[in-house]
Length: 348
Image 1: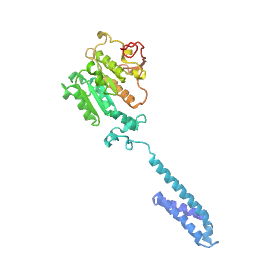
Image 2: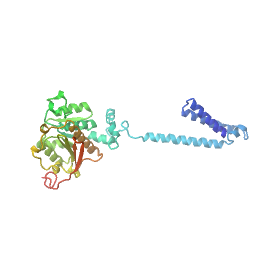
Image 3: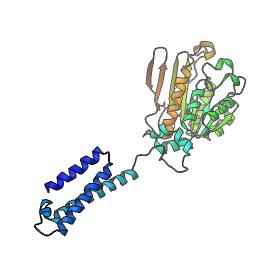
Image 4: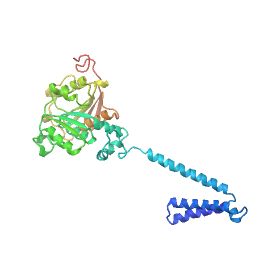
C-alpha cells in the first residue's frame, strides 16, 4: 500500500512540474488504481507484487468507489450552483422581457436587491406626469427617463429662454424659443429611446386637470406658482394619486410626498393657504443657485423610483428642507389636519 501511495504522489508531482492539467493528473492516478486492482485480480495469492500493492483487490475497489462518489457529488453540486446562480442583468427575464439594450442600460439598477428585475419592470410599466419643465422639472425628467420610467408626461406652457439655461439643464442654447415640453421631449428621446414621452404644451387648468392626471400613476409638481400647486394637490387627492412636490428659493429647497390615500398629509395640510406674494419672491426677483434645482429635482426622481418600486422609505409625512449655503438638511414631521379643506372633514 505504501508503494501505491508513493507512486500516486510521484504521478501528481511530475504532472505539476510538467504543467499538466489537474484533470489529467487525476486521470493518471485513477489509471494507477485500476492497474493495482488488475494486479490483485490477475496475480496469484502471495505474489510479491500483489503483496506490495496491498494483497486485496476489495480495498482498492472500495477506495475507487468512494472516489467516484466524491466526483459525482462534486459534479452534481456544480450543476445545481449553475442552475441557481444569482440574477444579473444578463439573466433577468420577466414578463414582456427586456431587450439586450435595456438590460445593459439598467444593469446597475437591476443589481440593487431593492429593485431587481421586478422593480425595473414596474418602472417600465409606470406612467409619471411632471408638471413644469423648468428648474425642478428638468433634472426630474432626465432621471426619470434615465432610470427607465416607461411613460413620462410633461405639461408646461412656457418656452425656453436664455435666462433658463443656467439651471434648467434639460434645455440647450439651440432650443431657445422652443416650447419647453418639446425641448424636453427631444432631450429625453435622445437620452433613452426606450421611454415614451407625452408633451402637453399648455397651462394646467381645472378643466383638464382631472382627465390628464387620471391617466398617470404618480405626479411630480415642480411649478413656481401657488395656484397650480393647489390645483395639482386638489386633483391628486380627489383621484387618490401620490404627489411629489418641491419648491426652491435662493439657496434653499424643500420636498415631500403628499399622499392622503396612504395616511400622509396633502399639500394643503402643510400649507393651508398661499403666503403673501411679498414674502415669497419669485426666482427672477430673489435669485436662485443654478445647481440647486438639480439637487432637489434629483430627489424628486429618487422619491418617484421608491414609490414605484416599493423600495425603502419615502418622504410621506416628512418635509425635507435642504440648505445648500450651509450644507444642512432638516426633516420636519407633517401630519394630516382633520379640518383640511382638501383631504379632511372640511373637504367638499
